Image (cartoon, rainbow over all chains, first blue to last red; front, side, top):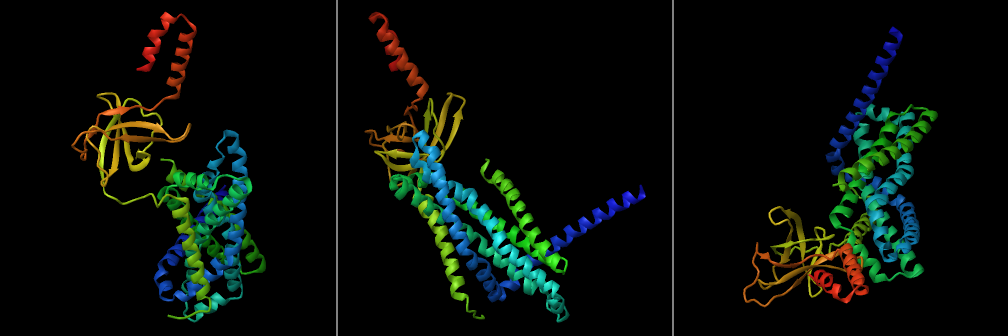
Length: 259
Length: 167
């Protein structure tokens, strides 16, 4: 009986400690924004690594998601004789939901895992400990630039995803299916609101950028410094970042669009 | 500031992202139709607004001259109270009339303004008194059925429902 109580207490204390540690790490990362802006070259390197290198993956995925949305949307809409609305359907689904969410999932897989593995290996190779020995704060020098690089890169990637997806939808709808180009665009422009749809999509992608990058860095910084530990942390990054993205997406959608 | 060999590519990345946002706002969204022109508000009352929504267009001769700002219910006259925002550069006579129209057969509804003949123009806060309600499909169908039944029935009985339906 006492053993059970002890284990519950230890578990709870451990969890609370983890949460507090994570929150302090997040606070430190946010506070180091000023230092990052002063040495922006570090952030720029990370934008290159996280953003530019993900661009081709995001672009190709967006193109194909746009293709499929237009084909499937046309299949349903032509039953109701409103095939011209396919442009509106593609644009709204991409800008409001699929753009930010799919980009965040791909970003977790493409960039988040590499962040976790990089930090985890630095920890396993005791590079982070060596930095501390030289009175260099690894959170400030290594983690913060990666964090802000990811946060900056993510909204741009999501915007590229949506824009390329709309172009892909246009490619399928107008030249392939033969929908009138004028009504394709005018239906879209009539139904997509700049602030309510595009603006909220951008807000979503910023939130996902914070979430995915932070989870990746946390898992890397927190992992066991062994090969198994790094591999487990990388897996946890993908699982937790994907679940957090989908869960947050529901909350954000409910807050933004339900009123 | 330190230079890095990736500067060009990072710059390009940011430019591509900004271009994508701009594309979404201008080509997919309706930023171009958003205007920051000065407007004045005019109030209209309708017996039935059908499916009219806030932000719907107000058109005169087919050209957008304003937007529906808000829709409320007036519990004194039991009518819908629709507040219109008209662009300041367009002035309309005081006796202009407003009606709710539908673009296409099943398209979205908008307000059509028809200019009157009076010398004085509408000022901010004025009420347009001549209005015509939205066409409700159910009423239209029941009118049609009424007149059909009347036509097939005795000619004498046809007069009453037909004139009633025209109202």
